Image (cartoon, rainbow, N blue to C red; front, top):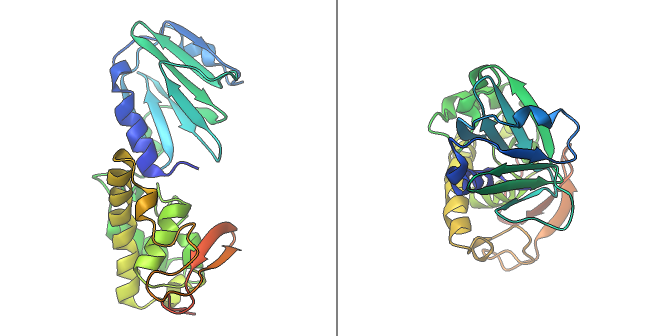
Length: 243
């Protein structure tokens, strides 16, 4: 599943179509995409893992889910979920969720929850975390209402960075570790963005999809943990369990 930094890169890649009118629209989405024909794109925005195509009175929300993809000025062999043609090219989305948002986006999104947004508010994130003391930290980091844009890679790397076991509960974390988790969720997201643009992201992974802990030289534990049951890599020696 693409994480927030990858969606931000998508936003940067499609700026050529900002302000352009959609000349043709097609795809197998079943939500009345024909309404896009002739519409002018006002802006592209992101919120966490959501890619937002903004028009005058409504917005198209695209979530790439686990296996979604897109193509700019080219196509895959399979039929797209949504295809938009412009005078200067085309934009195609595959295997994704597409929905309409009516009215102002400020009524639909809490921009302060987006870890990559200028509006990100760590104090607000901390307040939300304190309201769920029994939640496992491996679930908390993936809760988009708290950390919009954080995905499984960022979760694994952040917990390794701050030396916290994924089965720790939010309420049991010392204040220092809680603050570190909030801080590093944003810091690592920007590192992810930089490394992704340079095509070196995987070279910087310390825990995710790794077999041996680089700090202790012992095998990582691998398990599907938490209510979200996502793949988790962690070290039993250097990542402390707080319960």
